[in-house]
Length: 246
Length: 246
DNA sequence: GCAAAAGTGTTCAAAATACACCCATGC
DNA sequence: GCATGGGTGTATTTTGAACACTTTTGC
Image (tube, rainbow over all chains, first blue to last red; front, side, top):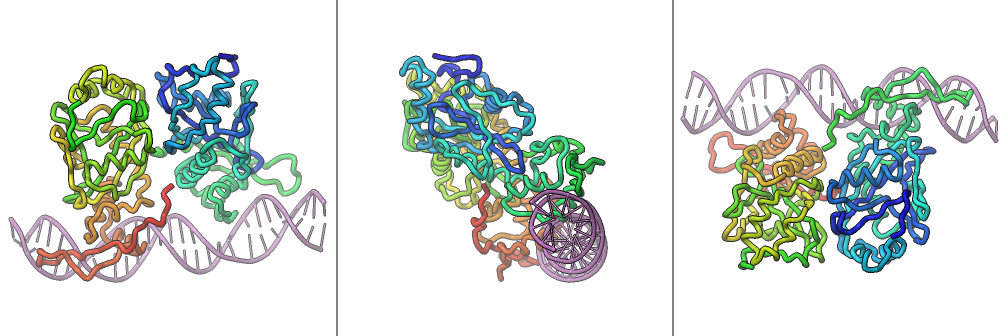
């Protein structure tokens, strides 16, 4: 078993059998909604960041551990959204590659060829807070949600389902608070809503509605570096954490 | 292994390991929201209807199979809502009882003493469509959601979480269509909303709003058997199935 | 005669929507 | 000079909320 401190490995006896966790990690950067993906050196397809659940963990803890491992923070909005349990969802070819990379014997990794169901989580992170940390044989990359690469097994479906979930929950998720830096423009906030809802919003009505909700306040600052008609900056007043989503 | 055609049993090699499905089955009867529960002869606590997922099934199929087995129908609204994965959630005492009842040797049922995570499903059924079908050593009973008996392990929490989910999704779930018989009164429909939301609605405003949505139509009938001021009957025009919940 | 259940409309407030003009800059 | 991005306000429509009185029967 080849390993170093940039990665970790799972032993069959330490993890819950036939079950994994996959995280759809969203951020907002350059006016695009981005998803964090990974690809191992010898593989052809990108995949979500996922892993297994240790015997002492619940699935949330497993998801937080995986997230922290790759992004350097566990301070993020995280929710489970769907269990993917189609018996044909696992692509055995890919797991074989994984075994070849990580297991010292074929016997040792055999458990990875069995059926896995996976719990989908979505995470909302602030782009600037993330310090990507990848193993040597691993690439991590943010992808524009609208320009996804070819993805492993059912991961494209998982991402699509995450997006649908966020869309349905948009009114109750503090989406801007989770995705934007401390100071932001109203256009940035609106862009997030527009990308997720796949429709445009009237600039003026959007602004009025957001401000009337009371959680966003106008600052006395404008975006610097632009001398012409610079956009005003806004900030969230208090975490919208008081609402229970479930 | 003692078994008859009223029940079925699971063999370790046929099912996905460490994973179960539990169904919170809701119906509406006598102006109360009811949940279907089961108790085995030798047990002290009631529990949700649950079971395991066969290797050839996905979790939805397992849930439908379990539902059909006990209610005689699989024609119902069914949605997954939460994965319960706390490592301490399984109450081993209860599983020991189960093994004593069903396994011919301690060895055979040993797998049941390991950790299980469970996917919670909620189902909406029409009370009159259900023909309860229990094994000889099993009781099935509808319980008023507001008067639940003592429940096994974390099943009370599962029910509470199901209710919260339905509450959050109420505007998009065709709840009345799923729970009410073909003809119903406006008060019955309103009661469902009031119980789930744990608040009362103004009779007149509720009626206006429902009718303005267009899916409920007034019939030319009133409730028979009452000669005084009998309530008008209503019916759903078309399934609200056009909306995709996720 | 009084409590309980059901029928019926209006008014007001709040929220969502639609929409137009001005300004400064980069090209 | 014109396209781009950003600032600002008003009028209309729609939706939600509040609210009262009458009828019939059971007890």
